[in-house]
Length: 283
Image 1 (cartoon, rainbow, N blue to C red):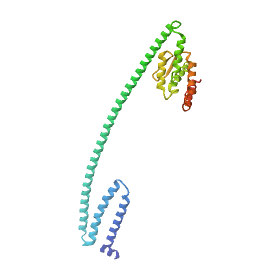
Image 2: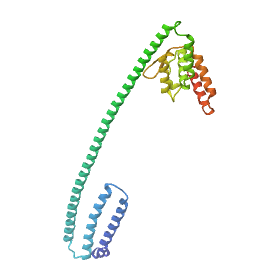
Image 3: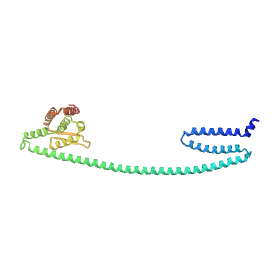
Image 4: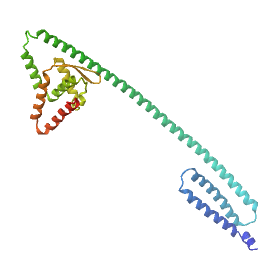
């Protein structure tokens, strides 16, 4: 009897509705912290349940024992909710499609920019290759000119040996060339002497890493004058063919004298270069 009274009075129904509302609020707060599709679906389900609860509350409050009418209300509310959700789904699909098309356009634009960058890089690579080929051809021209000059000087020297040219004059020229030469230049010439003695090709970067270009030019000039005879490949590896025998002692004396007369702040650095040269050729 008590249960029938509760059912007839609507208290039990309102209690169930209240518990349902509490459960919905709990689920809403729980899924509120999660991102993604679950959160969106929770909104839809909560809205539908709220519509049903409103109808139940209305039925309990009115309590006119017309159960068919409340069922009709719930069915009508469900139909309206389904139509509303269908419209929302269609709108969402259209928006998603537009966003996907925009992303595709961005990707296509980025692909075009990458293609342009690749083309520019290819042009730069071709230009760099052309510059390298030009430098190599210039080095070949320098080698040819150096060999021709050396041969001419050697022929002139041989044709005048013992006749019109005094040997003392030749010695004076060599002394002046070495004594007035730079420290790096004399180091590079002494490296050629040691290389010829040990039959070991070398790179100037092993001896004078900071001014190897200057030292290479000095060696080419000395080869043109006939003081030494060298061959230089594309990688700047120097092979010494011949040197004048008289220059070794003169170079050693000039280098050691220069180190002794160097300023204190430069003396240790010059001495280190000289020692590095000797270590390279195991002297």
